[in-house]
Length: 82
Image 1 (cartoon, one colour):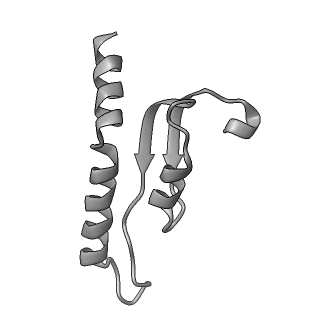
Image 2 (tube, helix red, strand yellow; image 1 turned 45 degrees about the vertical axis):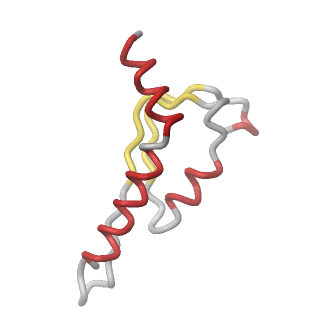
């Protein structure tokens, strides 16, 4: 986004089959404002195995930790107050 000089995104859907957190960590949140983000986090072991429940819950826990950091909560509170 920075390379394109984009500072605001209405809606971002992140569905990249694995490196979601790595991608989120590359965002310069001081320069980019995203109104709504959806992140797919289900991890499968293939068509015969199905959903890997433990890996999926672990990914969800890590995503919750990422989005519960102080900077994100402060920004969300600011947006809600506007």
